[in-house]
Length: 241
Image (cartoon, rainbow, N blue to C red):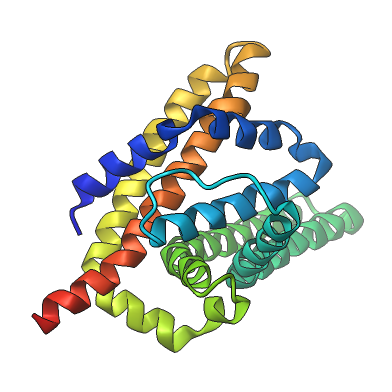
């Protein structure tokens, strides 16, 4: 997998049809209504499907019901894969709350609350660290899982076919997966800096972010994920040859 080609193609891809970027952007603007959130996720899956089918044009906005259902499936996949991190974070928050209630109820010597606060902070920090490490590790695997679902006609089971997913990752190559992931993180950091500058512009900055920048980024990442997934089959063909 040529990471340079992946990045350059993925950046060009959304600009092939700015009207569709804007349509997706409108869904971002309406995301407070909740339903558009699932339509956005459904369209991202549609981008994956189109890219894996070898199409270079952005997919159409049609069959909205199907797109909505696909969005729910993508949401479910991410929630299930991230459940351990969510549980750890929830336990950490509950621990902090419980400790704070105990401190307030104690009315004991001044050193006791301080000691408890130290233990509470250490426990919360450990929980958050474990949660972050888990999410860092599971995210690229989840990307392959969602791509596998897209490749298998939105079959939710394909996203949890762990033996197939691990086999695909081994075909992609763990090194290539890590390189892709690191590059995507680096691009994300650069984009976050640009976004922070953009949102500093009152009103207009936020509108541009939701209407153009966010949809462009989602399309970019979906396209690059399709490249990553497709490289598994390229590597198999190379090994056969």
